[in-house]
Image (cartoon, rainbow, N blue to C red; front, side, top):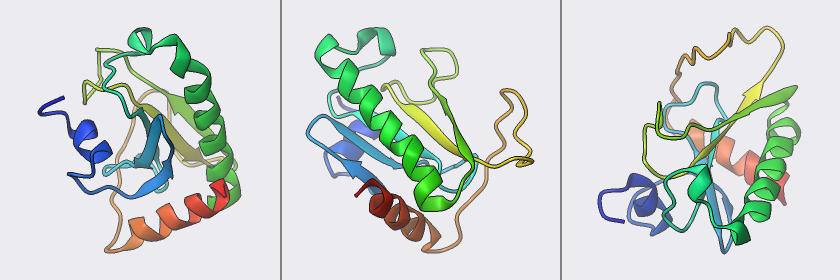
Length: 136
């Protein structure tokens, strides 16, 4: 899809710190993470919302989300995760994406207010490598 930043990442035309690469899905670090290690999972096929996701991709999408939620605990030492997606409203990129945000007790995340942070130089590559290792 022209002008879709996630399609450009999937096609290798835009840079991303990839943590999971499969036939149907790609997961990479959010460039403006809520907390470091915040991952976005997208279908390779351009799909705008969850209701648009083809039936044959549903189980694989959830399985990939489960693996990433486990990886943020195993690979980053998080105590848990926040998993969410928007459909149309508050969807910053019109390509289905699921957020997996590492969580720790007392991290300050309250309700649906999502403060954003930044990675230091080359720090995102370290987070991506740790998550890839945890994903095996």
